[in-house]
Image 1 (tube, one colour):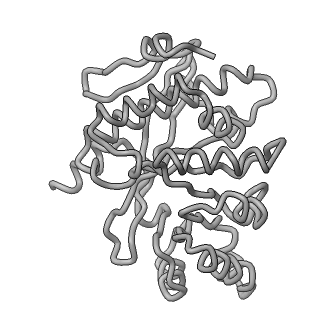
Image 2 (tube, one colour; image 1 turned 180 degrees about the vertical axis):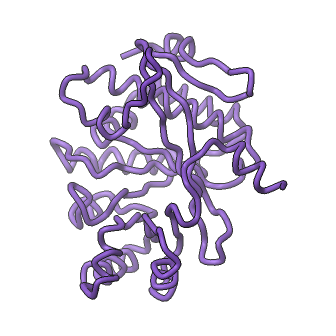
Image 3 (cartoon, helix red, strand yellow; image 1 turned 90 degrees about the vertical axis):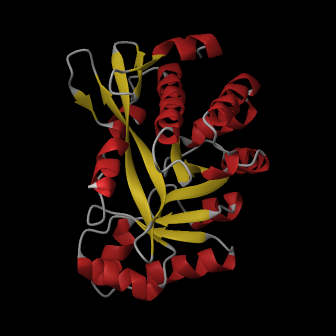
Length: 262
């Protein structure tokens, strides 16, 4: 993996003020999707990376990070660089006092928790950006990991470092009840498939997920809201937070700031 100085050499600030990263003929940019409270005020933003190749072609992040043909160290370096530019872009926005949700590969979470050099750089970036660790939510993706017990230990170490923890897309793939009980996250983000099942009369999976969250004293986010009907249904269930294209699509933060001041 790249050293601290090598990582920093990949990051540059554009004329528009946005931070990007250049790595192995790839360009990494930040977009953000707001997360809302019940009163539809913004409580936090989820950072998402946009990856383009040398020809300017977009590469879907899910396909990139789940690729079996890309070297593991390249996946980790892109993830690490993404995290750094997300923090820098978020910090210079009007939303810098909100929570910042950062996606984390489960396998990378174990390294993140124990890599002293990168951890020092991460915390230094947060400090220099006038943020605090408690604003940062490490959102564990729904991907498999070789050893769930090691992931749980890494999550505890991240929590001890002041970071908040979230489970992404609960109810699909590896975001299971077992992972939730092992990690004991501050926040559980429910996959939209549970909402769609509830909307079609199959209510048990979503109600059970809410019950699990309440038992663990975890806050809840419902993902993937696309209609007013879905939003109203989920409000009646008492979710803490709401996210989806009905409320906002992923964009650069300057777009939201322009809308806010318009």
